[in-house]
Image (tube, rainbow, N blue to C red):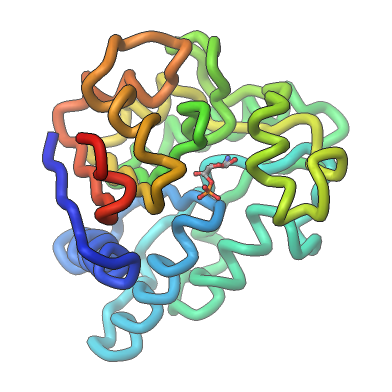
Length: 240
Ligand code: GLP
């Protein structure tokens, strides 16, 4: 495990963007999975910035997203799909047929999950970007999720609803379920980049990186990954 601690959020964003950009420079047809949430917004902006500055070629890159709220369409500004397109993908020269996102509006969610997994079977992920929930979730793999699951639908915990309340207006307005790439699939990625910012993540970062490996702290499984890079700001690294 490689842990990088940066003094500011901006430095963290740049360090993470350099990791993603490096991946695409070294392997232009990389498969990269992007994560939503507040943590990755700055990363996405810096990726676009480097793309414009350096002229990085994203035409062969394939992009997947990690999760989606059940019931939100890709046109909904609060959906993960909309935000990731809007923050990063729409600003790169990526081909639209190279963008894949789980369908939170699917009538048959289980089939949608199965199809997403089959698509991922054909596109082994080179780099998986992850944030972390204050309860230790990665994607929408909430505490207690079995490590062996592939893409699946998960009921969101009240702690997750509280964490997302500011963004949705209130905890009650947060969708009740998420469709997520499972832990097994996350662990199959060749490299993982885990990002965390702020004091609210300090405790869970310590448990995830140095505590017991247990489904109760889903991110703790990342300790088993041979190529994990963790980039933290000073606050998130405070008690390490
Ligand atoms: C969410 C998402 C994750 C995200 C995490 C952290 O619920 N499903 O993909 O990484 O929570 O969110 P934030 O970055 O807003 O703290």
